[in-house]
Image 1 (cartoon, rainbow, N blue to C red):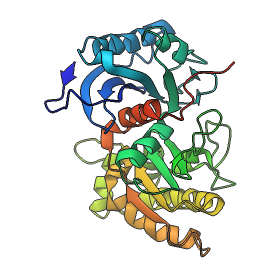
Image 2 (image 1 turned 180 degrees about the vertical axis):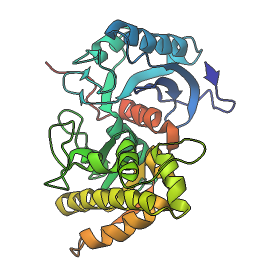
Image 3 (image 1 turned 30 degrees about the vertical axis):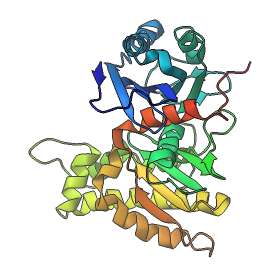
Amino acid sequence: MHTEPEHDPAATGLAAALDIGGTKIAGALVDGTGRILVRARRPTPAREDAETVMGAVASVLDELAGSPLWGRVEAVGIGSAGPVDAAAGTVSPVNVPAWRGFPLVDRVRARVAGRPVCLVGDGVAMTAAEHWRGAARGYDDALCLVVSTGVGGGLVLGGRPHPGPTGNAGHIGHISVDLDGDPCPCGGRGCVERIASGPNIARRALAAGWRPGPDGDATAAGVAAAARAGDPAARGAYDRAARALAAGIAATATLLEVRIAVVGGGVAGAGEVLFAPLRRELRRYATLPFTRPLEVVPATTGTDAGLLGAAAAALDPRADRAPRA
């Protein structure tokens, strides 16, 4: 457990936050201003059985509970890789095969002395974080995207995050932008994720003739480095990803009149390799007068987005923190 060096012990509104993904389970105690006061972390035993994965979650919670600040925790927020079903309190992360319909909210509630527990998907958590402390702060209507191994997202509508009935609203990665495109693992075809996720950017670049450099980096980060150096196949892969993202963002703006699109996740780390063609393509797709002012900006909450978003959900007095049958 790591305790941050600067915090106000008199601060109120403390939340325990969990950020659950395929590689790590992170936990934190977060105050009402968004300061992370205590941290804990375990690797996700993603290929193990369901109880082993839950054991890692329990270990993170136990470490947080060992803090002298634990007594001030009012609620617990969970941001999890999805799909999630916030109404039922269950999770089925694609990259944690043993968890299918796993009753995570019930299991966490049993370990936190009856404190309220709120579950959101990781895209919704990132959205809540960016609206609370990041680039979407001050916007009443926003779309936030996580572009990484997959492509997720979430919405802010009317000044507050809008997770939808099951917690999956805003999942832009599975909007189809190519009706005759490649089949997607979701069952659709030509989805944004199938074109713009990190593995699919790398797949496209390799198919077009790009080859990794001496460091052997065959990921989207390696493609981005090659694109900066002028490799045409690498630039083409990012241009195509940007076009898919622009089409999905424009469709969302047309439907919901969002005013800003905030893009985070590992692929966003490519910087202008991604954002320059994304802004250019967005001008081609967002053509109606009420969509033209749409801004596209990088996320600012970084790797803490999941924890901050889970805490924001937990501390929201309007949150639905109890699963329904």
